[in-house]
Figure 1 (cartoon, rainbow, N blue to C red):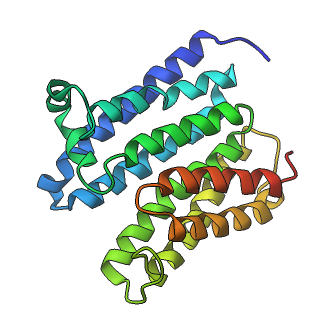
Figure 2: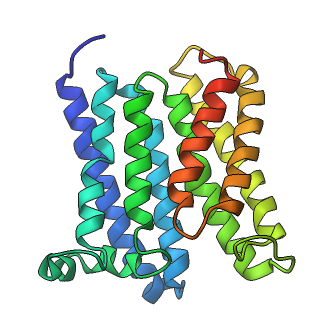
Length: 233
């Protein structure tokens, strides 16, 4: 495996710029478009998930862990658990988003993203199978469940939300994998069964997870299911 290069550093800096830009945008969606804070937070979740598509371009794959790792500390410092209220006030947009939903949700999201890259540095398809269902599937489940949910299941979740979770998780995975396959040596057909299995496991994990913990359970269980389903290849 080659060592890190200048290109890796550029990718990391571009990723930070991307995240910070969408943090700023998400913090203003409530006032500009009239979206709720919850919707703004889900929008940020989805946009951050897109960073998995950058991972295949790293010359030294382990360096891609730095995409999300710093945000574990950042999201903690702007959460209600922060020991530095002044910093929390300075980063108002992100701090406001942590107030909606589980306060540690964005922290867990950053942890799970980083953990998957550390565990599977040369398998961006596995990382994508864990992150994209959390980014798009969970966001869709929350929005559909809130607006259209009528049949309640467990932990306050709805059947309609779970259906959206499965459908959008699978769709986002297949789109993401199609992009990654243009760089990696696999076909979408080879990843179809693992994708369906991962989407199903992610849906069950989201439905059963207590509030906030799905940000860990969904990515980790989804990625492991996909990895085992693809035979570890």
